[in-house]
Image (cartoon, one colour):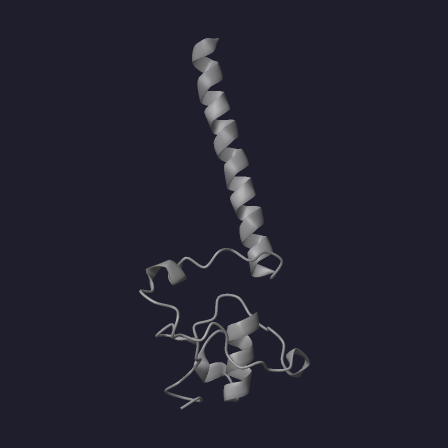
Length: 105
């Protein structure tokens, strides 16, 4: 019986951890959970880099799944998406300024 109990406990533990991870992923995608930004740890110095783009009034735009600069209509919209929406790909050099080559030169 002991030989059977260990694998069953291991399977139950793996299933529990997978469920917790999936729920955290769904919450993050829904904007309910802010996961820590580990990319900041890789940066040598954040003192000179802006921590957040200029404030844009949130009621002008909404997160709708767009993630790339080519999908933005203006620099202001790109700044809103960078500041408020998850999983964007708007700041390739991680300096806090979105779409520098296309919209925000």
